[in-house]
Image (cartoon, rainbow, N blue to C red; front, side, top):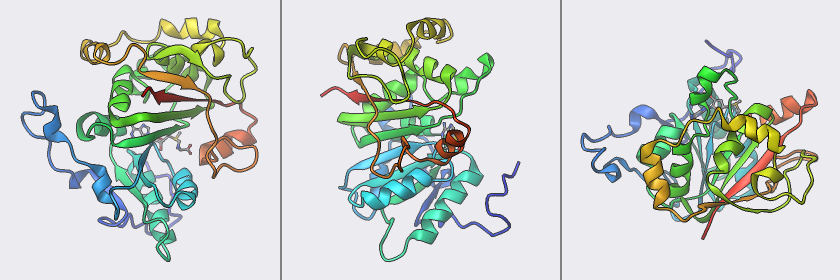
Length: 284
Ligand SMILES: C[S@@+](CC[C@H](N)C(=O)[O-])C[C@H]1O[C@@H](n2cnc3c(N)ncnc32)[C@H](O)[C@@H]1O
């Protein structure tokens, strides 16, 4: 299916310069299961200055967040990961066209499944922020396994983040939010700071209850699969509460009244939808 994003104009993801296609990645080694590090590649090396702080976005869509934020943070390298080929190509083409006078050399786009990339390819402690904005809700129960937030992803995000690094999440979807919180509560302590924007719940509550009506959270718990054994083992080797649950700080690029200012946020805002947002910070 084509979304017609190019409006008839050929899109150029600028391979080797902006876009990184899945085919460019080396094959996973045969002994990957016994030696997980053998599959690692360091995406920081895809940038002119790999020593700069590194942030990645899961599901960049048309790439609007990256385009807006990367010009305001030129000393940070941003990798957008998008698994839909047309959106990856469109976003990479936008970056290519705006790369004038040295701007946006700090943005690259990768065409792959971000969950698999984090799990198999990313070395430990390389990333300062993982951005996840308006993730696909997959509302049917049988499709919940396709949602980005899963226990395995949270174990991988924790591993890949630097101490103090953050997973930042925004969604419009109430059921997905409840799903996210029902996962997060197994990874965070009771400490939390206030409530997320758009929430009208009492500020006095602590932990996930400060971010979601406890009854909705209780309802979502029954839908969340048990932590897989391999993740349980990894989780047991982490601090008791690997993350703190915090309110979401708007990036500098967000416009007036916006949380992040992505394409989906703008579309949903026009429809008058409510938003939910939070930050998970890896404990130091
Ligand atoms: C609803 S769109 C939101 C796009 C953008 N973040 C925004 O707010 O406008 C979700 C995007 O995530 C992408 N996506 C979903 N799961 C993904 C995954 N596991 N890896 C990479 N991209 C993914 C989808 O293809 C889609 O472009």
